[in-house]
Image 1: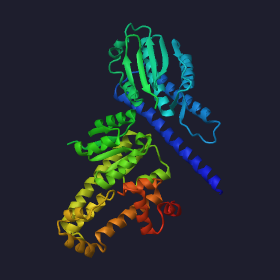
Image 2: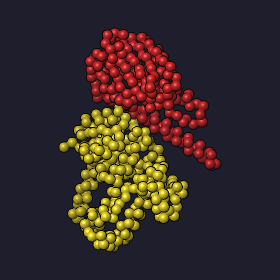
Image 3: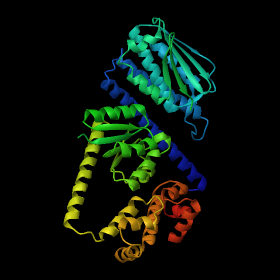
Image 4: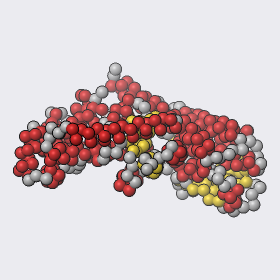
Length: 200
Length: 245
């Protein structure tokens, strides 16, 4: 085997190892979410829908990862475009649960690690389930500022979103853990919930 | 008293899940998400067993903790990992964990691994006590203490003064007795042990030479390279190229 072929072979093996590792970690996250749901008595409006949405989030993220790296001989970057993902994922959510509006400012230059993007999509799925419990309209606004992403979630039926914690008392553990995992914070403002997390 | 388990994992969902499982099964649990927190908890929490994520901070920090635990403490540890490739497994073996479990895991996987590790730890400690009672060591107690000190401090500079202190003998008496019982001088023994460990790491891991030098207590890459050449006749990188599997 020539030195170059050997080197390519080594690189390919490294990519496969990393992909297998990521695959197992993603499965672990899905499993942990289900187990934490049971342990914390998190009651979803629609359990099955939440699971299906998580699986589709995973599919969308990896589709995008594949497309972003298609031109490369070997994938070198595990970051994907936040804007492309959110467009695709919000469209998906709108198809299965109407009454969702979203507004993205220009975030075309923002890329995010695949693992973080997955957690973000699971946060959106949690919020979407709260929307269903309230039988409400939900709007998302996504802004990028100073190396941070702000996502504002607003429910039309809530006069003050500061009541959100009280309204869903005992149901927020999974959301809190995921916000911590993103190294972000959730503020319960009067007009919206604001998720802020750094772009690492 | 509940057995104390320290969980070192930076994924918040996974650590929360493990915490819930261990709590439900009657363990006293502390969670850490970094190297610094883990080291601090060794003294403050005094765990009997540690569950350690390999890919801490996405840079294999867990293996560094494993290496530290292997040389500095007798606390058994189990790796949690999504890696099952041969290179990573070879690399973790050099740190001597008592086990590992792969993600995704089930409750039964965690509990079985922990119970087995705690059982083995207890049996080992009972065996050691019996062994000490029944059989005399082949070394005198002062030399045994010095050997144990070398074994646990192999990853730093070991001064002869320290060995003399743990042996409780005078300098001259210690060096003479050590050479008589072990067959080589303390300096040569430490050197050989360090080089044995370095060879194993070069052969079985992808750990950079600089890191191996640092792990063995060498303050510069060149002093490690000189020592290694003296020992094996090859530079560390040539040795790796020739013998790595």
